[in-house]
Image (cartoon, rainbow, N blue to C red; front, side, top):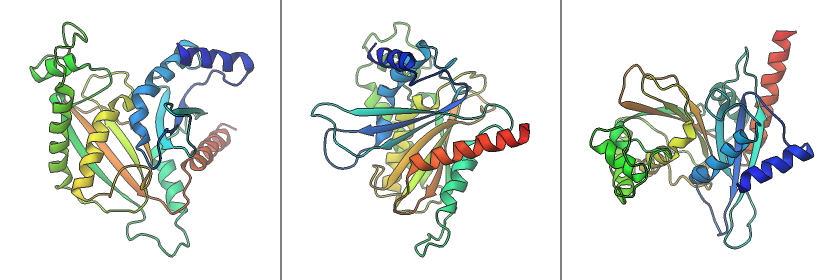
Length: 292
């Protein structure tokens, strides 16, 4: 309700308007000191984006319209007991040439290393892939009761959110983290001092519309396992300068999800916000050029 009032006031003042395909760039400031992992705000951001849908700012917030959701930590300290969340809506082309965050962000990050003496040995980054079965898949759409039901082979709890599965979420997360560590150790990685992560999410066969950042809990568990695997020192903004969620094509089988992490090193002083704006502007320029 609060977010809908904010969106409505923005619409009325001309500060927000309807878009087609878009990026949602989220900045988060927390009341404490030091670094945080901003993608943990995904559960709070979800109803904020839903409120934008209710205010008809976009047709839907699924992956057909919301191409990607990117999380970074913003400087500044909000009042005690509060978090500050800013949502920047960046329109991108939905027609040929269709915008692709993977190639655009890869090129933008790679260019910033040109001429730098501290260029890493793997300046082009790397990708690692994780397969997660239904029993370990955690999403904001599942309550603890749903997760418990999935352990027993059911898709959803018959009594949605009845609380009987209290505590199962922590157990599933621990199991997922242990499995992710095993998969980390079967793949090559490189520990960068500063990096960004593009988290591609592939759903089982038959899934139509979905919101990839609903899987933030699953991706966070995989990122946390990466600490033990030696992929990075931590996943706070001290080293991880941003996490972007986007959708991959569906898998050709049921019961299994895939998370593909594309890890790109970035130089000191890297600003993801400016990079997002630049690549969106370039995408529209290329779109206009081809349509001229």
